[in-house]
Length: 310
Image (cartoon, rainbow, N blue to C red; front, side):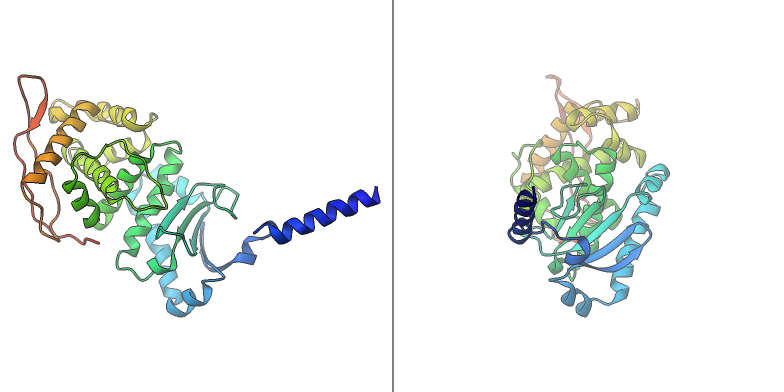
């Protein structure tokens, strides 16, 4: 019996040596820079010297204030309360390709509890667009709490729309790429560790178009899109039906009508000229019903406004 126990002990010892992180604790790998309420900011110990020397304590406090401001000023009350009950950890660590990544609970290699993990590469901290990136990844955490099984194209489209609503800016590279390639599938898939500006831009433009034409200025429409019980296009269909009224454009009747109108609008805008850098992109359409039963926008134009493109 003693021999068996020795073998087991040796096996565990070898595992701890040769399996990375097998016995690692959070405190062994990360240094806590700040904790306020349910929000913690931690830096990987490989990056802690850089983060502490380049960014003073006020930087991390501002970051926490930004997250709290998003919760307090941009979420419905019940969702505010729900998010403030969640443990949110912001990690500063080297990522293989993405500047920012959201990890659902249990999917990070070290944090296996119920924490909502948002990870940022140290290179992103000095970007002028860092807070927009934070807002984007934070929405992924919020959206996961609402709809953990949502399809990726909806997640990414709504996350970009959310950052646009808060920061009044969009990713110019994504938008221009999407406009130049007008045949992208709407129901695309994403690799969160890879860049795909064409797909990102396409899905942002669709949800931007949808809100501009179908929300009637009602903020509730965005949250209906984000929290409907169904996933993908069925969830969009449900949100459109809940908020539909006789005064709204006919393109807002259902998902098919809105998707058809958007695809036509985007294709025609491809040939009507690109917006100058810094312009706010707005697809301004008045839908008309053709004899064949299809919806077509009768006007296509860009409206100029302030922006803060990447």
